[in-house]
Image (cartoon, rainbow, N blue to C red):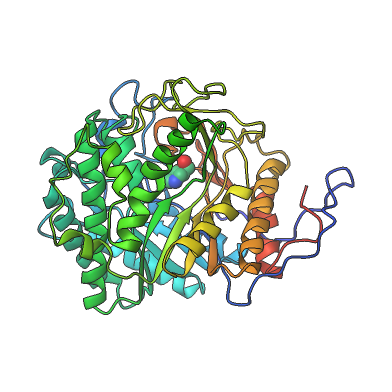
Length: 491
Ligand code: IFM
């Protein structure tokens, strides 16, 4: 935010009669203590890559290799949040956010990934947390959102057990700095992405294509989470939890082959992470599926109890559902990655993602809010009880340029509206869902898609860094203010 006051009055813009669509339903109201938030992550917004004593992360290195990022960009400047955080927090306050989920950059706080802390880096997060608290916004730091210090990758990265220990040490540096002011901690964001996009498909940093290493990485990310939970709890931290990206997985047909493909993909995407964390064991069928690439001999006897250390909450990131077919099953292939090749994840080789009939976001992800209800229901009925938070949900669309200070993004409002109705339905069924964070507060660096995809409720004009709240930001502010949704769907 550049100090302009286009966000001055957060009234929901009036809709024309053709834009309003009756739902016929009642007006969903959320529990009075429901937490309304928005999320970002360090590498995607901070910029200031070479400042304040920050070292290089794996994304600084990966994004500089031609071909890795669609538009050839990187997070050097991003949304310049490192310098503009005060304006950004003021903007959040005007939206009425109750919580802000941000991530702490490990290479900013502990440049070598081990050893001494960088006081300037810690100071940045102290100032951010203080500013949030001054505005009545609860800070929700995430301790790892994909920006591993490059020095740790040079030492082997997440496939090495030592990285999990280094992570727990770094977490304590952060806790020492802001632990007196932070109540809610999330450890690792979407370990599936770090492990399998980072070490198997190579779509994300560090860009390795080593299936065996990806399975080890998945385990060590979980171990790092468990070690961090224990250390944080010993240090008196309030509430701690991990964040998983979960997808309902359906078979494209009732054939035995497609049904088995769905089991495999569900195992690899969901149960490989949920079961160790919430049940203290790896699912035997997934271990069998992964046998061609891993004997799981990296798993030590003491690890699973550590990973399953009871946590106070579970964060769920939900974007879409998957329908899958066996290699020669039914259905038509869908873009699995940017390059339109089948995802080479171990354990599900040859399985195809099948395009559904619904419309898609600019990421090519099918919009299906009912999948969020499915995910929440499953956690409620199949796993031990734990308070749930939707820690990311949102969509990229090809937003139009600002016109008269307004960016109209009706598809995003529709998306958020539908998914919040799904949250409300789940709560009505008894699911312990306690809060919801939109991804994302601001347009930002969307990893290997660079700046070509905009997820923000706030438009960022990158050349000037001007922030322009989109119509969805106004709409979300209204939802927060009313603690509920309109009786009619938004657009
Ligand atoms: O931008 C990412 C975020 O960093 C992690 N979850 C998914 C988002 C959209 O791809």
